[in-house]
Image (cartoon, rainbow, N blue to C red; front, side, top):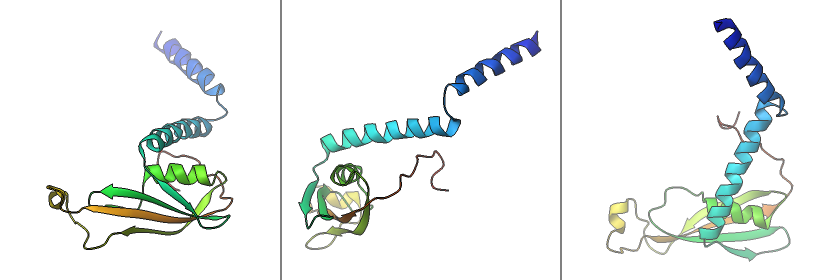
Length: 138
């Protein structure tokens, strides 16, 4: 009885997997969907400005009101993909501010000038598609 149950579960699992081209393809499709959904949500809420430098080069900028924690932004990624649908490379990524940067969120309480502008200079070029993975780059 227990052997037939295991056999049935194995057959169901194999049938479900046969519907996908591969397990990796299925994970990649899920990842693309999650990234696409995140891009849509971020592009709605993000306030990214795009300045065209020439046909292939663009400057993207976004205002933040917090200490600098990274040079990454989901909203800027979404806008960069929208600006350069075939792909892009970073020419530079930097945070700009007149005066000193805040180093902690406590310094931002009371409006102590935590604002800064995140700027990316990107170049549009064909970049090979990098599939989504659950375990990062390999």
